[in-house]
Amino acid sequence: MTQLVTTPFGPQSTASEVVAGVDLTGRSAIVTGGAGGLGRETARALASAGAEVTIAARTLEAGTAVAREIAEETGNARTRGAQLDLADPASVAAFVSDWTGPLHILVNNAG
Image 1 (cartoon, rainbow, N blue to C red):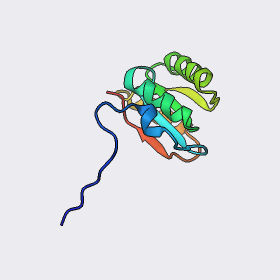
Image 2: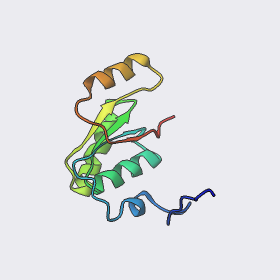
Image 3: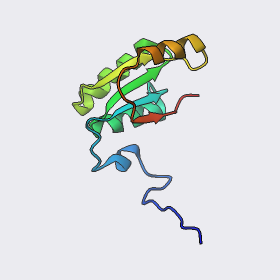
Image 4: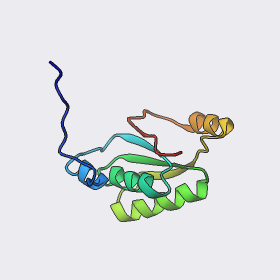
């Protein structure tokens, strides 16, 4: 017999609702495409739950600006922007070589 995995969340659920009551302190996350849209809201929700969040964007300026806004809104200073263009192998290699420490959460939102 197959056992179904169920969740209280549905198509109308928000990222903030999903992380409500979750403590992500001590966890690190990367959100690709985190400078806008769903990626931005996901990054905000992760930061509000205490995660250290790297907002990977095609331009460093965009990622850094959003990281600064999220840090102010959530009170979580452990947010940062990083340049990552997934269509450019050199950009991916540079991003990976700059990464230090563990990675607990990867949100592949870009593209």
